[in-house]
Image 1: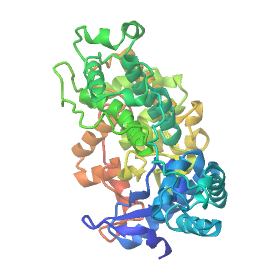
Image 2: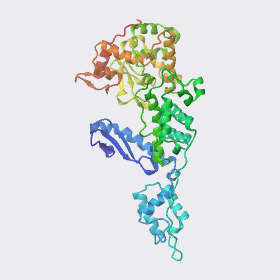
Image 3: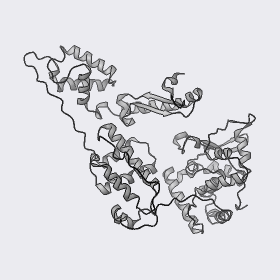
Image 4: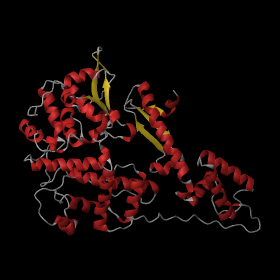
Length: 483
């Protein structure tokens, strides 16, 4: 297996993973890492080979793009590698007669390129010219020896918080929603410290930011609240403040940025290390998701939202799909026509990661049979012209955010304003309805993406899994749903 040279079994867990050295001139695109590691999540060597191929193809593309996009010396200090080269030969820059001849110098340099610093030909030539033009004392000078000068330590470049934010966004494949969260995190840090150098941020600054954010009202920063500023907000009493989990997400962006800064030598340490957050504060309340009751479903699906107002467009179908499949809005929002498939007469949704689509985790990749309710209502026929529906928005992330907000406003308008009741409550309602209908927990989890499953997987050695899941899902009854 050719690809298996880059696949190894973890010595403790036995799970296979991709492991490959990253060329020096491509490491900037990998946040300075020397080795690429990615778990394949399987202990089966044949399955590991299949999963490794697309990972290695994408990795080769990233390496090639990084090597062609910018020269190695555009992001690295030539003088530092000159010191490294000199020490590898047992000599030190600045001492007289380091090499008896230019030929021996170039021979040693080529050996250094092969063993320590593999570079492209243009980058090798640039380094050679640098040595020969900037440091002429590297060649014999019998009449006037060059005095030995100890190397001077180089100061790390001064990088501002705003510059670190830009570098993190440029080098990380964040979704639009994640980019917004990243900018917000840096904005809060700049609010209390200004756009200072990243080396000026201390652990004390991070602890202050933590304490201020934990006192922010959960309703968010309205225009009136924004005028106050973080420190003024913290002086006031709020009945409901943000949860520590929300603050942790803010710190995740900042910590990732500082990890990159440490690897690049811009700072010596990450000030977010060893910063602890409480599990809960006296005013932080965790609102549990709740189910839709049968009465809720009756009120909701008899509202104007479903009575011709949307003419059975994507706004009509998304709530029905979420209720009868238990899928997340993020899964449904990315569906295209190619994701609505048939297997021997069984209509099902393929929730996958094809063409850049994202899922919460590996188990979220699954096939979910359409409930007979949707088939009878004509969803497969409508989908031929109606999918994909994400083209109504600039991106999937914008769709998820705006649709979720509009649906929450609908619930308030029709009198279903209750803590924890959101679009995501359809997922919880499905899980509860499945239990009431007698589905075992394993089947329930496979349908909702908590356990892995595939269309071709066997079920009891006799029946294809998708057919068995279709029978199970059609047994689920949703009380209160209008006929």
